[in-house]
Length: 292
Ligand SMILES: Cc1ncc(COP(=O)(O)O)c(C=O)c1O
Image (tube, rainbow, N blue to C red; front, side):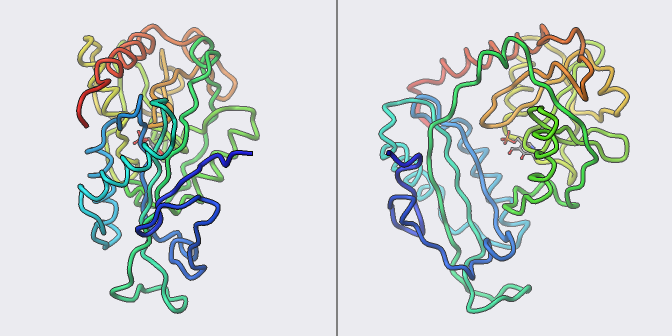
């Protein structure tokens, strides 16, 4: 049976993912001490490469690490993985992470000059199911139990894992998070709400991840004349929103049709969502074959 992820990159080598080995003393394994990125690759072309690379460099800087590779080196790894995937130009996503590396023992305070562990792989990006586009997603809400630096895309994702499980337990697709009566994020997506005909997404802060797809959604909304604002969304506003959307690198932008079992707007994907979704598809086609 073919391995789902045939080749990965680990510390300078390309090898079958099943043969990749990392020390159990790696700080990523012991402490979740690292940062990561996930980027879609449409028809062999990375989407928003600079935004993802910049966010990783920023996450690492906030974790007091330099980026171990230059932009050119990262590009080289990405093109090799895309090429080696043998996917024939199908859509993929690239995952990459940097951890603080493996030490001789277990120390909370990191030792200086430990080589970073760099790991990356590419795998097929599943198409968005037609039922999601036709019927929308069911989502639940929960108190945001994440730490105070959600702006860092850290591999330490235990709260996100537990929060996503709440959605799974409820037969829903995603958990939308509230802190002090305000919308923050979802467990692994950004959240947008249409309120009074205007698209709103909470402003970037330490309480949310600066989503790359959110920026795309806002740019596309502006392009097709939908008013948008980065502004707080209260729980009451969220529950009364005409439309709710979630967005993420592997999801593009998807409509939410029910929240905690109650219909959102008319209980169907909204008209503004459809316009932005269609513009997203048009934009992807327009980028095909362009340099990246
Ligand atoms: C908590 C959280 N918010 C938002 C996002 C969306 O970010 P992006 O659009 O860059 O994938 C993610 C993606 O993993 C996430 O984990």
